[in-house]
Length: 244
Image (cartoon, rainbow, N blue to C red):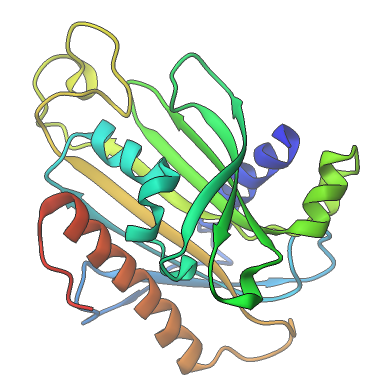
């Protein structure tokens, strides 16, 4: 499971990294901070579902310390407050592997107890990591059959993953040292009085045919997903009403 989580994080970083061949396009007038989108074709990659993958990302400020944002996003008990795809279902942690001294550094296997029968065969693999400079929470839905193969010693490289996640950084206005670090142990980029810079990035398979053309409807759907997620996070952490 740790090998699969490592590949998931690498895939997330690669999937949201721009290049001369894959550049970000900004969508204006979305109702939240500018959302950027980028498309990739996935072909002959056993670790990624085949088709057209749409990446969408945006960054915004939160008036809470990085540790508060990190703990909120990694906690399965608060996931239903922001994760639209969980349909408000309760999330249960099936497995937990510590991956560092901080309690936030771990790999988790989550299950969504949703009334939606189409999600009954899906689990969520999640890795969270934090230190005094910043934090990330990366997750990906995984097929329960494929996950059982991995847990029984199967090759994790053939599990198709399309990870999404968050990067959390201090805003530079915290008191204390680097990232608002005060005396004593801290996590999530420090526990000072400053705010957080949060980047949210989704990768979604919008067509299972790699040669298909990207539709405007797919872009609108992904834009709506990321905008609604941002609104929910703001409503939960900053007290702003969510315009859903």
